[in-house]
Image (cartoon, helix red, strand yellow):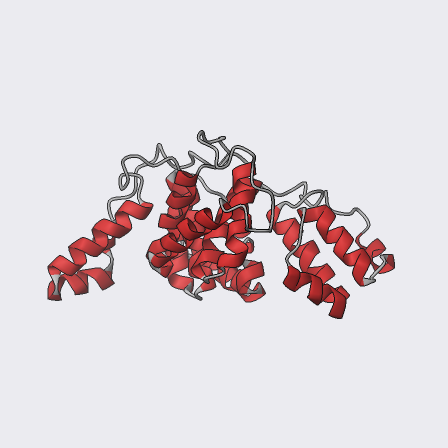
Length: 279
């Protein structure tokens, strides 16, 4: 739970040793880079640790009003880290997901949800993170004794939207941009649409475990990180159709603040306000 007396933090020990100890208590471990940061600028790292702890549900930092599960938060974070090529950090999140009972298949499915926004090389970064996390030499986080789980532990958002088919105009081929493409190069448009619809629409993938609701949240966060207000608004409308609510959209966007900056949240809010004004 968040501290009921936030101003009590003003009296906390801000020595590097104390800041590092609190961060380890929240997260279980910290990277060498952040140990150096804490030694040089303890207050900076303390704020990073507390903010990330709240957004990613580190021990003792969950908020009573938060609605998205820690598992989905980790999946969003993993995908965004891999989109940025942060392979060193990403493997740690894989291990955290394994401890939550998330299988490699679901991580790959999450990667496909961000791929239409940032490119499918991100899927390769996710699989690389899985391989790295399985290497005993990787020093950050603890690998489960049995390795990657074979059976998924369900989480609350897993099946959201599965019972609600996509709207008829949701296929990529029905967007004005890709209709323009289709008029010039129909085969290019057909193949691109087939790929994107596979990644995001309920009817796209026949063997998916991750429902269309959480897939849209992953895509929305990525669109906001790219600054795409109007495209994010389109996907927010689709997420609402699947049963996702405003707070869940906002929380999903906030999960990528540590990797992409607070500006991403502001961009996300602009997209949400656009949808509020034009549902």
